[in-house]
Length: 284
Image (cartoon, rainbow, N blue to C red; front, side, top):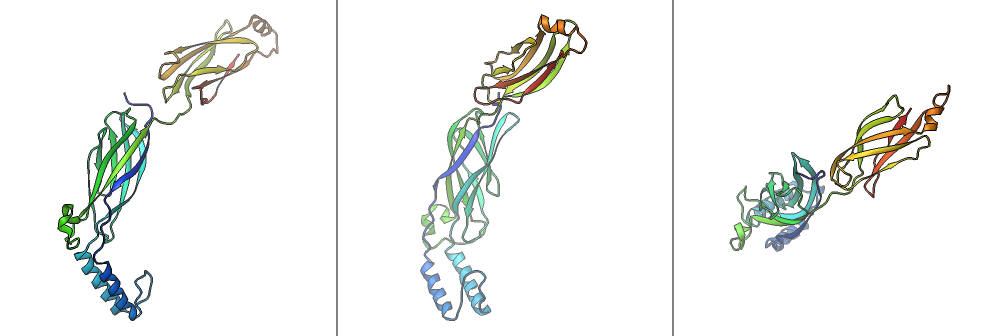
């Protein structure tokens, strides 16, 4: 069976392909130096002579073709961790920056403890094989910019895939879900019988599977007994049946006109750290 809550997940890039040096950088600086003599400024928003803009654009297209720079992994984040049909599904994204704004396609390896699917936009889903798995796992996502033909410098043939690919090894960590308070639901009752006893039933659930303890407010006109099924140390939902029995004095007093025969009992459940929503019961 799947856990009641999905795990807490975090992720980081633990290894990434380094950005290779650009062999065209000295040439680019020389071209900018010449254009700068005529007042050209390459910064965005600058107003330049249209001819100089055209010359710079032409150079950049040539550079992008002959000395194209591969994408570089920058960040990775977890988007959601949830349970889907008793399966843990953790979605996230990894961001690669491509200096030439080339379209990227992605591939991925599989983790030792889970499977990974990658989408065309770089988002991924990690599904642990065991939905109860906690610990770390690693997988590698690779970005490839070979959709448009170009070269990655004169030494590209010495690099894997001719320099088109860049990879990021991601380490994902799954921890047990954070503690949440027990919840009291499905109250039926109270019902008062002819002998003055008040009964009812409700459900208490701790999603973390922690043992629970019931706390009852003090009573002055009677006593409360209850039974929990299954026992309070068993993980899951528990059915609680309760009975309020008034004292003989309370029942005697109830026979007098105008007597206050009601008593309010407040019940909460605790897992030792957090406390549930209160259940208020009025016995008459």
